[in-house]
Image (cartoon, rainbow, N blue to C red; front, top):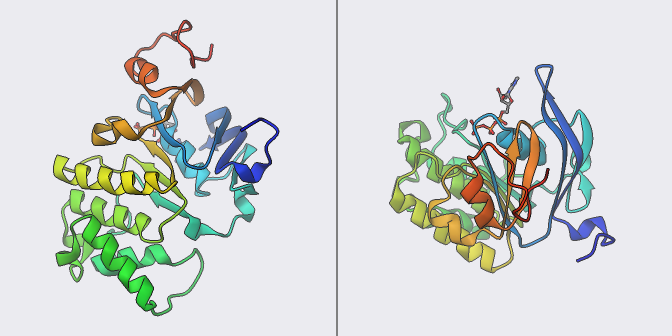
Length: 251
Ligand SMILES: Nc1ncnc2c1ncn2[C@@H]1O[C@H](COP(=O)(O)OP(=O)(O)OP(=O)(O)O)[C@@H](O)[C@H]1O
C-alpha cells in the first residue's frame, strides 16, 4: 500500500489531530494510519493520552484540530457504527441501569440513535454466540449490576463482538479480568483477526494478546514517540529516554 492510496483503503486515518480536554491539549499533532487487518497496540504511561486517542477515534471526543476518518469518512459524518466495535476502559453500562446481560449484548446490534426494534432470528443467534464466546450464556437473564467487574467486562466484550465489526477498538479490554477470561477473549480476537478484522487495543499488559500484535505505537505526553514493530517498543515502553537507534522511534 502506498501513500497515494485512496482514503477508503485505510480503516483509520488520523491527521494532525489535537484534542483539548478542560483547556489542556491532551493530544498534539497525532498522525496515524491503520490499514484493514492490522492489529495495533497503543502503549504509554498513565496519562499519556491513550484513552483520549481511542475515544476520539470512535467519535466520543471532538478534535480541536485535525481530523479522524473511519473507512474514509470523517468521524462527524460517519454513520455506519455497526462496522465498529468499542470496549470502553471501564463499565459504564451498569451504573444503576437495570439492564440484563442479554439486553446489554443486544444493544451492540443497534446503530447509534436508532430506537429499539425486536431482534431477528439471525441477530438472536449472534447474541447467543457472543455470550457463549465469553462464557456468560448462563448469566443472560441476570442484571449486569449484579456481576463482578471482570464479568461485566466480559459482557462489554460480547457487546463489541456481536455485530462482527470490521474494526475493534479496545481500551484495556482485559484490565481486571482473570487469566482464564483473558484466554477466552484472546481466542475470540484471534478468530476475528484471521478473518481480517482490524484491531486497535490500548493495553498495559497484553498478556495472551501479545502474539497477535503487528505493530505498536507509544504515546508520551500526547504525542506519538514510537510507531513500528511491536517488540522494540514493548521493551522500551516504560523507558523515559527516546531510543533513537531503534527503528520506529521518532525523535
Ligand atoms: N475530562 C478531562 N478533563 C481534563 N483533563 C482530562 C480529562 N480526561 C483526561 N484528562 C487528562 O488527559 C490526559 C490523558 O488522559 P488519558 O486518559 O487519555 O490517558 P491514558 O494514557 O489513557 O492513561 P491511563 O493509562 O491511566 O488510562 C491525562 O493527563 C488526564 O489527566
